[in-house]
Picture (cartoon, rainbow, N blue to C red):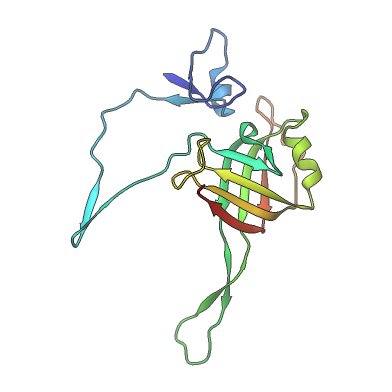
Length: 192
């Protein structure tokens, strides 16, 4: 198998990783420090479908190295998963005579959930998040570490709220990870 570095704690992200004898590769994989890559297979042509005179091609985005900041602190090396969900609450506006429910947009209530490695070192997870519980802050997330652009936009939640912070989530033989959720705030996206 081929391994690639996925955390700055082991070296340069994207560089090949060759484990020395005695290295617990399974722990590095499950901790998100390295990723396993299979031998490349021959590429198939992209699937296309024709709708009238238009041709549509399936596309996707692969987040190989997203960046995350919390309260202006780069938390990328402590984050292993993220989900940003934009939510505009639905308000029912159905009136007499309608045969189906009708809704209009209400207040925005977006969320950003992060899975993070819990570290108590200075400027790491606990030191950054502890003072933010019960307060509003700003968080950003970008698909890759490359420059902000139309194909690599930076999403921001300004004034989002951190309600809870798990202090310890321990299991024998496993890295301590926590899930935190920032709620609300104003969503914006920038491409430059």
